[in-house]
Image (cartoon, rainbow, N blue to C red; front, side, top):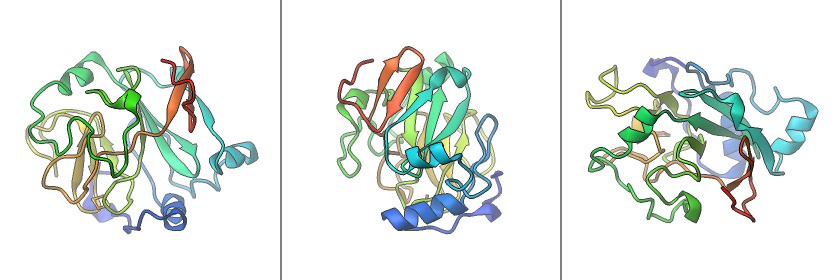
Length: 208
Ligand code: FES
C-alpha cells in the first residue's frame, strides 16, 4: 500500500468471519514489511495455515532488523513485530496529550498487564501488535518516520496510519484523539521463549 488514499480497504466489522475476509483481501506495504498482497492465509504453507488457524505461533524476532517492521500470521490475523530504535522509543516519552489512552487503561481491547507501560510491550525494543485498526478493521499502514508528510500532522512522531478513515496511532500503537478509532491497537497475548523468540497466543509464563 502506498500513501494514496485511493488504495482504501473496504471497512469490515471486527467479527471473526469478516476479519478473515478482510485479511484475505487487504494488503500492507512499507519498507521492511512482509507483503500481504496475495490472499493472506491462502499464501501460507500448509503448516503455517494450521498455525494461523488458532495455535500459538513462535516468531524469530532476531529476523526483524533494528528499525524494521515485519508481519507474521496468527489465527488468520496479521501480527506486527516492530524492532524499535532508541530514537523511536524516545518518541514515546514526548508529549502524550494528543493520545486518547496513553496508559492503556481502556478495556475494550484490554492490554495485557505486562504491556501496560509506555512501550506497550514486554521488552521496550520489540513491539508486538495485532495489525487491525480498532475502528472498522482495516489494516493500517506503518508510517515509522517522524516529521511532516502527506496526510499526517506536521509533528508526526512516527507510528501507524489507517487510510480507511484517517485514524492514527503512535509507535506503541496508542490511538490519537479525535480520530474514528476508539481504542489502541491490540497487543496480543505473548511471551518470550528465548532472547530471540516469542510465542504469540500464549503467555502462561509471561517471562521476559
Ligand atoms: S477502519 Fe476506519 S480508520 Fe481504520
